[in-house]
Length: 336
Ligand code: TYM
Image (cartoon, rainbow, N blue to C red; front, top):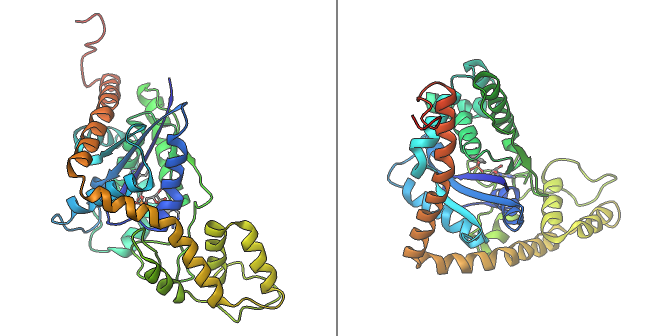
């Protein structure tokens, strides 16, 4: 049987370069491998774990589906679906998982602590359960490979832990999923601090940004005098060089590093060239997305058939877990 691959992106609006390089690029690579079965989704249930607007959620969910397709996710190869279309099965499985996981473990996750800081008045059960829901997303297909950025590693660790605990407690046969890393597994912020993130204004470039906007955003990225004995390992300059590496290649990065330690870098030139390299990669994606915006019934059909394909596998797993947990009679044994 082909190994399965699962990944998801929250329905928080348009994708940024971090999502694209850290997750989507990995998905594209894996969907082309004939030894793998790939499933990708928009996790709209996860989007409800922090304050959100129910009126704009459907539009945000759809927007991520369009971004997936525009980036090259091929529905002929990968099942593409919306998480809440399988809410009955996924939320159900996450409840079963909650019988083997402790509250203390969930409260100590760095991702949970960050969200508590961001939204101190919204520390809900849904937020605490976030990693269990994610474990259910993955394990419902017994997926073994998960293309995601490095920031998701603590959640994957929980998924592995849940798989072990479910297997030990109930005798299920969940595999322990591992992360599939890309060269953009950690895309830094344009602000010079931390990672690129939708929740930090000024930190990101969206997949829909035009050349003018990309140029403007890069112009605001912090730099220094352009010269020194060693290239700074962190901060604005280090981040800019990471972008050069990701979009113009390692050789170009090395060239700038040498310049930094020699005659000096002219950041105006670096930023102009970098903006053009980024836009060159985004332009075809933007063109394809425009076309897709008019293909409403095609996109509806993609989502519908993706969910049907996913549901077939998901149903099997949920039934198996229910049987193992003593929640259904062993109907399949002797056909009784
Ligand atoms: P989310 O929606 O925050 O991000 C989607 C994907 O983008 C990656 N990413 C980054 N990668 C590199 N550098 C960055 N600066 C950067 N920012 C975001 C994320 O690592 C992720 O791969 N919990 C998940 C959603 C989820 C999921 C799942 C993922 C729910 N269930 C099952 C995989 C499998 C999240 O919040 O991703």
